[in-house]
Length: 303
Image (cartoon, rainbow, N blue to C red; front, side):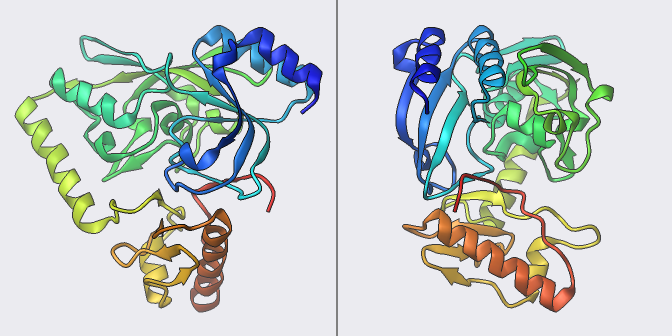
């Protein structure tokens, strides 16, 4: 990265928030991948706005991450700036039946706050490992629940540094997509509209979901959750199982024996291992069933 670009970043951020050659395996749930040239810890709206404006003007390559739960970074790393939205964006405030949450807060922590205040609607999110901002962008969901059902308003910053605010209706939610994703909006705050409930019942529902995850999902291994989107009319995990791929390995990457919709890092997997296994799964399912599996995981960097 050019010296003048780094110099401008240093004018915007304190030195302690600028990490160089940072291993991205420390920041993704796959626990694999190479280094980011710059890893920037963003703590305020102002810092984010200034950086995005500068990156747009200078043509600097960047990518925004929260908890890294849906991301695979190349073993060759990423020759740009990673903007990490976490500390500073992790506030949670409850007002009546609304919860206002910073984009860096974990969905699981937000669901726990809802439980604490006897608010129902976010039980489905209690076991999702991602951040609120990423969940809003991807319309994350589980067990028949989705972010689109509970989000009332989102604040964010556009790629050219403009501040925006959207209502639920304006967000154009779909299956694992939204206007936020399409327009590359960096989410800063999400408002949830929930409903009053009975704490004991909310807790029981969350416990039921947690037990179902424990029994059916390979939670003991690093992964990105469901590796592929659900094809219309099918379930990705069943297609992969029926294609004979259960337990199939490439290096340290494996199709989970517990749930074939998950590719796991069984130990020492490289990003190349995971990427190759994803391709082999896609090819086998296409050959046998004529169904194209679309990755839910985002791949960042060059092979």
